[in-house]
Image (tube, rainbow, N blue to C red):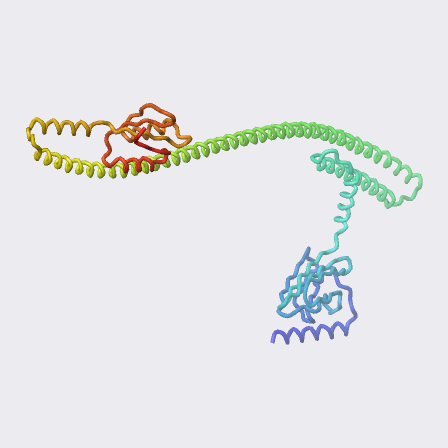
Length: 410
């Protein structure tokens, strides 16, 4: 029902506008906004920067601006997708239209900007004149002060011009007197008084200009001092940053040195530990080999001891069968046999090329023997009688790594 009522109101408004004479839109009359031939709102004509935001479900095809009587003031045609902006001028006023059509629906934004007033244009002109007067800006900090001074001077000049214009207008529009002589007499003092006032105002303007110059000079001195202080502060900050950078570099160097030293010590300790571990493993292996060899020698000695015992028993038995079985003779035979068993076993060896004397001494010590003389490269070695037969003993000696050859006879 609301949509039909709006259509009826719109039709009646159009009929009334056709029946009566078109009128010019007043400065305070609202502006009607239509989207796709449908009214969606209005912009206040007397408002300052009046806005209107419209969200539509369908695409926006046309936007129209109309007066109260339906007169078309302007509008635009929107694209199917994307942005479209336009500025519509209505007399001295301006309406900015912005349309954005999306995949589903669209949006409309309208901004009403009224024409600037006379005083606004006057103030803008004065500001432009002041900007041209203060075209040279020696320092950014003085720009605002110099602009203020120029603006004050322009304002005083306008006041003086306005006063002169007012006086001249008053003199021209004054009541006419019947006698020219009386009129001359009555008007003659007025220019003198006006000139005195003008001179007084000019003196005040000159004094004000002097004060402004003094203030400007003091302000310039303050700005110079401020610049000097800023320069000192900047140099101090630069030196501080340089010191901080130097300290940081020194700390980084020390940390790097400490890190390298720690890594070196760690590597040395690790390598030393590996070497010691390898030496310990080698010693354990040597001890294991020596233990195995000693076990074999003990077994051989036990076998040899058993053989000797059997020989001794055989000798005792044969001796008992002899013709002279006297105990004294048996004791002598046992002593001679024991003496023969305690005599050192003598043999000669030659060692492999490049064998050090330390290795030879170590080998002789392991054999529990003693070195004798060296004759033509053959080393004499004396040990306790071995537990195995001599031939087998020589085979064991020849199996050593450092032994090149071995023999019993010289």
